[in-house]
Length: 45
Image (cartoon, rainbow, N blue to C red):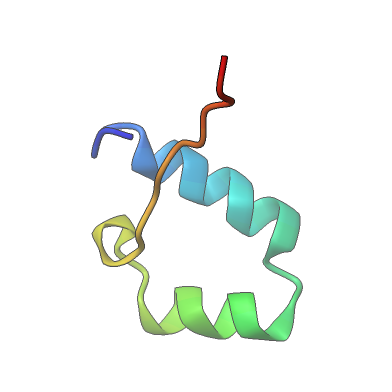
């Protein structure tokens, strides 16, 4: 994924999973999207 795509993806992930204690703690400690590995998985054809 590109750096430009990260903030939107991270916001969606945090909205969906941010209530989980570990997720919340990590995003609080590392709020910059650049601190989180983000990748896309493609199915094999």
